[in-house]
Image 1 (cartoon, rainbow, N blue to C red):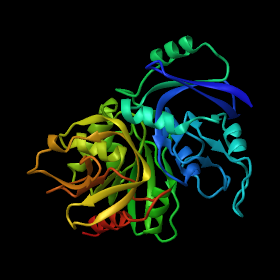
Image 2 (cartoon, rainbow, N blue to C red; image 1 turned 90 degrees about the horizontal axis):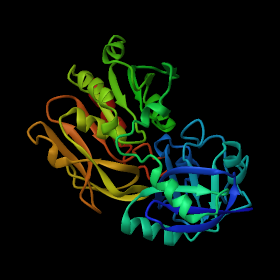
Image 3 (spheres, rainbow, N blue to C red; image 1 turned 90 degrees about the vertical axis):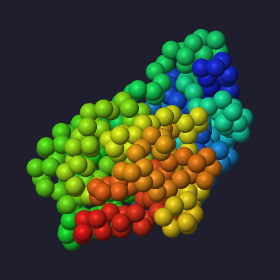
Length: 360
């Protein structure tokens, strides 16, 4: 295995070795606290442009299968692991993590002090980073990291959105849902289909009139990567559709876009929320849910007009927005991932609430 360097924009460097791939990659360095679900995490389009540090020390032990993909390829720019298991032991496994990353041309490093990396990011915040097996000059790599593009203001969602309209199958269709693909996770489509939804998936730059002419029963806004303020055209599309009284449900990036469409603002979190164990309080029921999350930006709940928009969920770790609902229009959203891939199933009821809006 080749030696590798991790260089951050603040001048900090860490050492490791490449267990998959080679070369040089750039991205925002973040950490994820999930103990399992690495396949779903790596294939989540929301990680486009990011390098993931896994805090759990052993990753890859149950291999990679064909069923747990959340995207059509690996979207993470790179993976940093303490120990990558060379053995994949599971009846569903078809290949090892190393082989899978190689197939997708993704650089994976292990032998890294991931605890030190995580503590550094937690203290100073997510930052631009470069992984390299080619350049051993630390000062030069740090300069490269500083000069690389960050996430602020970037419309990464358009880079991962579908380029063509397509249909997702449903055995017993009762409702027609128009889905705006900003980097959708496949389990969101699976759960809608199981709830008798015929799904038409649209590129995120599709104009509102094109979506409305299909007369959908509901409108779904997916998760995705990047800065929601970097997609003003998409925000305008959502605003127009929502104000046509089309039942609307947004998840993660979709939550942020809906917040902007309803007159709010967003901001970048210090190091984001990424993991499968975030506590969220449902303010309507008083119940606490354990939730999977993956976001670096957040809706400023205080920027929303409380007479028009209700905050429905908050993060118990830092009090940030985890859900909103319009008081008059049939529109709501959640910052966390109720499709539970990977993660707990506590938020699955939100899909049922979406169906309820279409029945009403």
